[in-house]
Image (tube, rainbow, N blue to C red; front, top):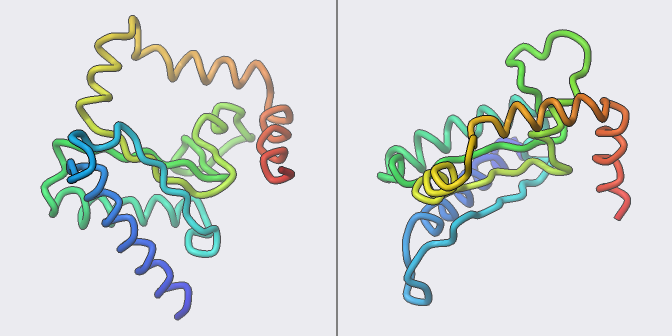
Length: 151
């Protein structure tokens, strides 16, 4: 029961930050271009748990609150994988969506579009990142992630 209540509290906290990310305030004319929400590992124990939480956030905080055209979220997790079924050998490319702690990255749609339009071949970036990480290898990527816990 404690984990369920923590998840509910995390979801409420995330909804509040989504509102803040989307709206100007009295102290600033523009909302922030990006917001990182680092979550408790106790709250989001697995990659799939974070994915499930993101579905709730998408529906409850983004769509219902009218932010669907203004915000998008990107997930990072220590165990994140690109494959929905996590089949096959470990893939260094998965480290492109890994972080030391479960993280929700909130981006304003307008800023993402501006970046994509201003950067030549922006659609090639994910492929280049996958190739680079695969070239470095799983052991190197895993070692770098582990170093984050030593600081």
